Image (cartoon, rainbow, N blue to C red; front, side):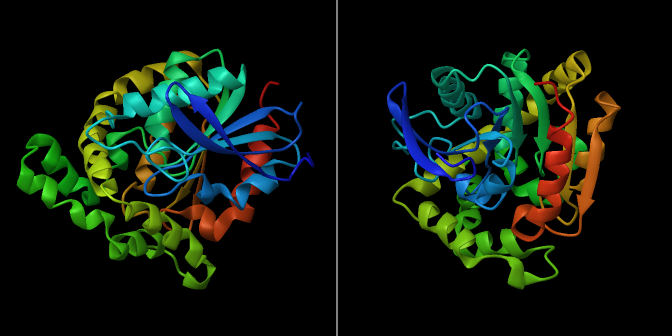
Length: 289
């Protein structure tokens, strides 16, 4: 396999198939890329070739997302603990012993759970709008927080708008000054998966369980303090969900954290992949092998 040629594969983890993208030299240092809502490993399509020049890159789709299996919400427990269980199985089956992890949005609570459970495996963390501090939660979370406090059917139904094409479009374009840089296949593919039968219920279950991530923030902070893991935050500073204060907050527990803000929105890689890719490569080059 050419080092920056991407392979598209599936791996059976427990009882489900996990789709993943793989690229880079087989003997290169490993980087694990974890996507967020409502996207998939497709969000890393432009970053992977940049990293694969030197690094062995793996980018799985979380269960319920992209091309991984998406069992019915009544037969599968859609929680962040359970999503993490399948990523843990993925890294175990592949025998990934040491790796840097890049997290975004939903990928952050999954990646931070992995780091807490496997501190000896993590060489460094790149967080691209992947939050771990209450300071980073914008007012955009208010309707979801209302559902946490009162998981009524009405509050659940009020969140269905977040799975509409209009909402997905809004997530991609809010805070973006040059909208011509956002590839239409990005939000159209996300919406294709969101529109699958019963997928909206999966997302509503995960909205509800996101409260568990906030509960775990102190655990994540303790891991940061204990490990002093190298961390790079690359953040779209006009993200309507995760505020720049969330990026700066990593320095409370990791004084040596590198924080870089970019003039863009939630999906910063759509508009700033070259700049962010350069910053990530520079960071990865400093990590222990």
